[in-house]
Length: 185
Ligand SMILES: Cc1cc2nc3c(=O)[nH]c(=O)nc-3n(C[C@H](O)[C@H](O)[C@H](O)COP(=O)(O)O)c2cc1C
Image (cartoon, rainbow, N blue to C red; front, side, top):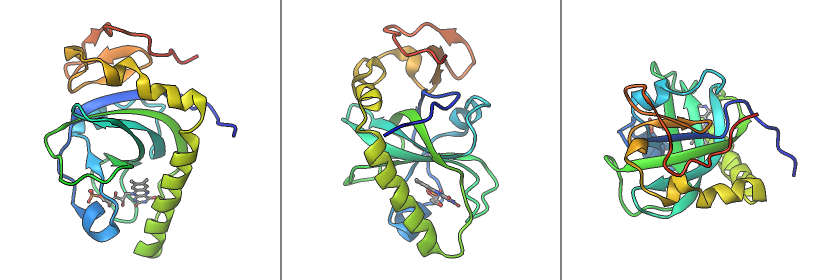
């Protein structure tokens, strides 16, 4: 399975899970975890809105597959850009306030508007299948064991790591303690 290399990826992000509109669980049956605004604002310019796949970890839990939607949710016409992660695991409880770590590895499609809720739900289920398949590839699989997920570092808290550089909320750059994050070429 061939994958196209996307500029700005891999992108590592960390933040506290905040409340969205709550439609993901209720209307769609597909819960999503929302990042706070500062994590969204720190996305590099080359990462366009759309649907991405990668890995996610909540607090000290295991690392799971994820699909993420970045943008304004055209179906709902949101006023604020969001980064919503659907973790491919059934959680027993909400985890607002927990620390969410993600690495985005690949792009699936742009955000779209749909004629009905059913079409949106079908599209998201297709994204989940696509992510499931893509993440089995060796080049994506090894990120599951990346030091970003397996080792603790204060510098990674509430910040964004991109292309091997950790940027915290104040925009300072910190070397990553075990920084063997791949550089984009
Ligand atoms: C994989 C994935 C793909 C999505 N694709 C779209 C899309 O194409 N268009 C759209 O309007 N919303 C899309 N969404 C966003 C959902 O509409 C959103 O998760 C839902 O509104 C719940 O938001 P809330 O948690 O803020 O309530 C997608 C979400 C996910 C997880």
